Length: 437
RNA sequence: CGGAGCGUGGCGCAGCCUGGUAGCGCGCUACACUGGGGGUGUAGAGGUCGUGGGUUCAAGUCCCGCCGCUCCGACCA
Image 1 (cartoon, rainbow, N blue to C red):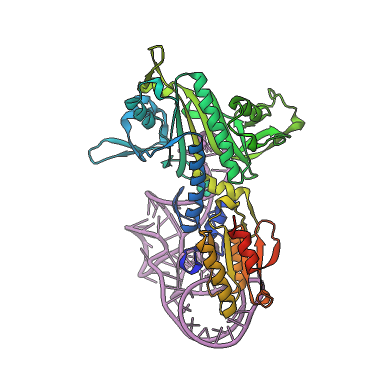
Image 2 (cartoon, rainbow, N blue to C red):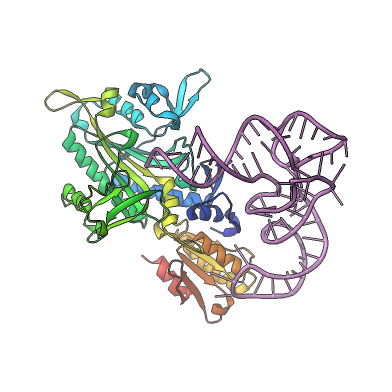
């Protein structure tokens, strides 16, 4: 993509409303624009990262055997009255009335809807296990939205719902999701810790929050000092016993503020790290809470009918964009992990009226494009400083810098955004580095 | 929902106390010089001062209502 054809309204000044670094950077890098409190438009650059994150979530859900579908954002209130949550959910639920004066709501979550789908089609244990998910916009009318997309009112979330015959099978489904989550976050370059958590208004008795550590995180978290030792996700292959794998992750102490009680904590205070974290996923097993309320019953092998056992599994997709930036930035701007960067490589022409520089840039640009490798070519007629600062702000993992200085000896510069290290390469070496394999 | 604050060109702000020609920096447009970390000069464009009412000869400025946004707290993916 050419920068002159790609809308990135970067800001030099920091908008005063932004309070935390990820929010400031998203605004400055031209990724989002606030539409109203807690509601954002995703501009092209932000949209690209959002979609990359969404796609990783999707791939890992599919790999774990979940099936994607899509449920609407607007729901009839009827099902919610049936489950009792229309009354219970309180003011966070955005209630709407249509022209016929029917009660509607903008879904904050979809347990009722998915249960309705399930109950009208699935009657036998032979169809189980089943896990259905969608990636859809949700709305929770937070009293006080803040921190940009990390705590918006409208947000994009992946929510999966598992259906099983009994508790034992449900735990297996839960474990599969548990491990899928670890893989998902790892692919995004994040270290997420599963923590014992409260299940909140969704209800249930087994629940974990996936938390990434960040000083500016919204909640206090506690975990054992040596938590990360011996954790190896590549051991997550299907060969092993799922429960053992999960147990391995849960063997060391980690809990959110609500669940943590120092007086009852098995870990000595000096071996415990107290910091802050951002919740980027939450999984629940809640048994038959909704299936009973909504009459989602299945017939077992013994011929008896019983409510299906359910779990739900959320990933805050839009929140992750902010969370990743919160966990990965420096004083110059964003530092994207490669898998979720809006573009993998940024190409900077230092001297845009130099014929030779243009020629080399066009060469690099077209050969990267041919292989569908994400590249953003800053072809604007700006000063070098402006382009380089912008590139650092946007935070693409690699910068290819083309200027007259290097061109003389047939070299261009490759800079790693994270480490800041640069090396001089020939065009051919550069192409080989990125375009092979 | 309790407490606090802010709405003035695209962004950041001054002007309000003490009423009297709407300003600054950045950005934007054109041209020239310039060209490896946001350069310089010249000439420009751009504002219903959130909104409705009131006081006054006169309101960005004073008074009242409303709306929006932000911060602290309580709450949450």
